[in-house]
Every structure is written in C-alpha cells, then in structure tokens.
Length: 339
Image (tube, rainbow, N blue to C red; front, side, top):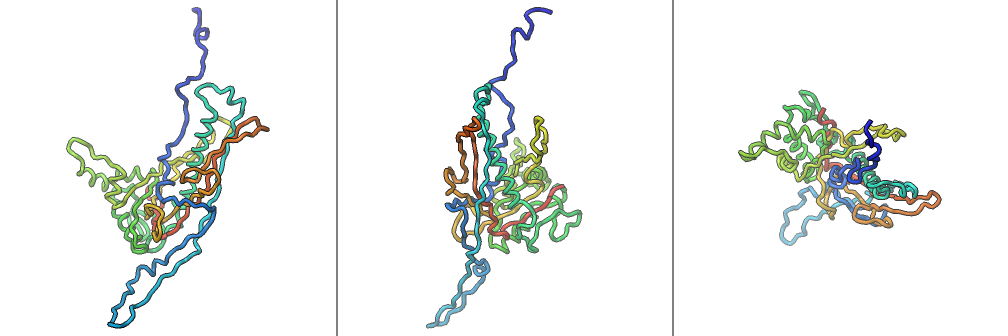
C-alpha cells in the first residue's frame, strides 16, 4: 500500500457551504392569501351583521303630492363573535450543543427556521379545517357541497375535472351565479388543492382557449392568472403546503407520511379585498395584535429566554388568531373534484 494513505492526508469534516434541509416556502401556504386579516386588540369580541334580505328588496313606492314617503328599515344581528386561540411551540438550545456545533450549523438560527415553519403549517392546517372541508359552505342553490359524479352527475355534482369531457369553466360560472343570487356578490377567488390545479392546468377546455392567445413563436403558458380570467375571477390560489402526519420517532426520518394539506378539493368564494364596513366576505382571519410582544399584522411573536435549570436558551413561537366563516353563503365547496 502506498504511503501516505488517503486517511493520512484528509480527515472528513462537515462542509461549510451546504447543508440539507427541508423548508417549505411561505408562498406554498394560502392561509394568509384568501381572506383578509382583521387586527383586533381583544382576544374575543363581537361584530355586527346586517340582514341581507332587507337590503335586497325593492321597497320604494310612488309618492303623491303633500304625502309622506314610504318608510322601511333593516335588522342588525349583534351576536356574531370571534375568539383568538393561542398556539405555541418551543425549541430549547442547549449550551453544550451550541458550543460544540460545527459550521455551518447554527442551533439558534436553525431553531428559528424550525419554529417558523411549524407556525406556517399550523395556520394552513387550521385554515383547511375551518374553510376547506365539507359541511361549511352554503352558496349552492340546495345549500350543500358539490361532489364529483360519474358520467351523469346529479344536481349537486359535477363531472370530475380530470375528465376530458368535464367543463370546469362553466361549472365555476354556474356556481358563481348561485352565490350571487344568495349574496348579491360574485365570487372572486378559487382555492385549489395542488392535485386539482395539476389537472386543471392540462384540461383541454383550458388549453384550447389559452393556446389561441399565444404568439406564433412562443408556446401557450397556462398561468393561474390566465385561468382566473377565463373563469371571471380575480385570483386562483394553489395550496402547495405539505404536512407530515407520521409520528415522531427515534430513527432518522422515520414516520414520514406526507400529503398535500388541500387534498383534491376546491373552494369558490367571495373574499373582501380588505376588512370594511358593510362589506360581506366568506371569511375573516381575526389576528390578536393585542397579544403582548406581537409584531406585524399576523399576531405572532418569537421569544428567546433563559432556562438556567436546563443550561439552555428557549426559543418560543406563539400566535393567536381565529379563522372565522362570517358568510357561509359566499362560498361553494367542491369535494374530491378530481380522482
């Protein structure tokens, strides 16, 4: 064996320019993009709701000379309320771990990344639980959800959007008109699970319409903005967030069971551009900005404090919010709209 050997001239050590981590981008999550956020100083409170039936009638009457005009009015409900639940998680950074960490590891920075990612996943999972499931939205004529039917869909079904003979554009317009008949507003947003968007983007009804707008020297590009325009919407939002439902285990990367948070569903909804008086919206996110130490409009705070009895510094993230359906008739939910 020639000397010196490889082990004599090189001792393996961690590279300082790379590390392998799995952090999802903030843009993969739609929880902060669909409904407007309402900053609130109190953890719980009430808000007013006008009776839309009173605002939709034609109650003006002819007025004879020297007579009073017809009178009318409207009802107000003061019972709707919100409550911002507290969500929190911490990661301890041990003094010895910090002191012995090799480059490019940085336990304090890595703990911050980890906790921030947890906060994003938490909001998205809660958003899906509150808004992106069955039994919540009542914007259809029959007041229920829309399912995916076979070759001959029933009244509350559509032909699955992964079927080449289906008509997703017409379906969206049809149910948008049903929302308008109930609320006077047309839906402006369509939230889709990633698997639904993948089918929509390749659907012949979509590609056939968009390809004619492409220049001869450039391919037709299927964008969310282009499809939204075809459906007469302001925006299409794709839920790219992924959640691991596996249990934490002692073995590295054990219990890995990933799935898209949005599943194979879709939500057509009217969302107010911003919180406003006398403005309907399918939902609002009430962010408790009165929570001590919160920064920004998302009612979230990151703390670092000493745990001397553990010889560690504790990094803790906390957020307090309530994702609330405030007008169920402003939305239509499509359940398992692709196979």
